[in-house]
Length: 461
Ligand code: TYD
Ligand code: MG
Image (cartoon, rainbow, N blue to C red; front, side):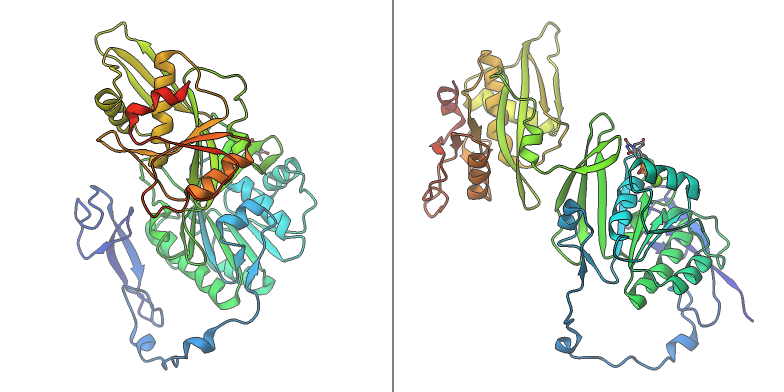
């Protein structure tokens, strides 16, 4: 039998392959990410590098009419965790492959163990751990109060053995913790290398598509990218979720980066506590939790994350600077965004902050990229500068242009509804364009229009 091996050079970041080694990947532009991998060209194997003649001669699989391929039964399986269903676009789809990425220690194993326990009540679930012993997993399950869950555990890392077990068990859900520990005996390279991850994932993926089992891979993301990150898997799987959060805060965000079965950009909010992850039922309440007395330097703005509106508290501190170089420190928004807003305020708002230190923060540790909070940031800055709290029960919506104009943003009506629900009485809004519909409705709150940032100051206090 011909077991010649072939060599390929693959970028660990983007998965691009080359015939020769090179220092810089032409595809993603990163340096020193192209590494050599060996692929055995065994007959019958349809590897991308060594498509065998046997495979090429296989009988064609007849094409079918699109309408005939439609599914009649509801293909989604609920995960038992509302927030997770939400990011998945309504539940797990049969045969779906999902990649869950995130920094080490963020809570990936915790989340999936909780998920497995919930689904395990009605379905057959197999939790495969290549990183922890069954005792360790059981200990965590005890802590999560799911110690008696009906799921099965497997600590195996060879993909051939895994597939043999899966074939016999016929599970509805398989969790692979983590894909970096799985390896194929057919390849010589070390577990965790690009070739191993790619090959093992492809084999597991095929199993999911053939049997209809849902496959969830955990993938570690490393900051320096020295081991093959799950980046190249992103192209192979149906759904990519990222689990994010700041170690110093309790709350975690599960975000859809890619989803073949629903909208991407959707977001789930969870908190980590002593007994695992819990859903945040009311996001606005959670982020405004510590807002009690009127305080100088804070303002509230509704933000749109995925399809959900939530309220955030914007905090600014403007202090006379005692050093030559005034400081500009932003967390939760881009540093440059803060600089830009300060420049607009100086030019069009009539406040000169050149010899003031400016600190900005979004309460709760959330990061917001939406321009809809521009006006809210300006209000918080002005409030701190004047050392007067803004009026209670007032919120801000609007993007600031470089000319000092306040611009409308998307989903205005949805934002007003959330404001009304949270008991806000008034909102400062941009002047509506001629055919804007959001001014026509009454939402139970007063809408005060303001066209220019220069006019905001007199509406604040
Ligand atoms: P883990 O799920 O092991 O993270 P990952 O799989 O992403 O590496 O969780 C890691 C952290 O979560 C760990 O530092 C402890 C903490 N944790 C809790 O705070 N409460 C809990 O109930 C559990 C199980 C973990
Ligand atoms: Mg883990």
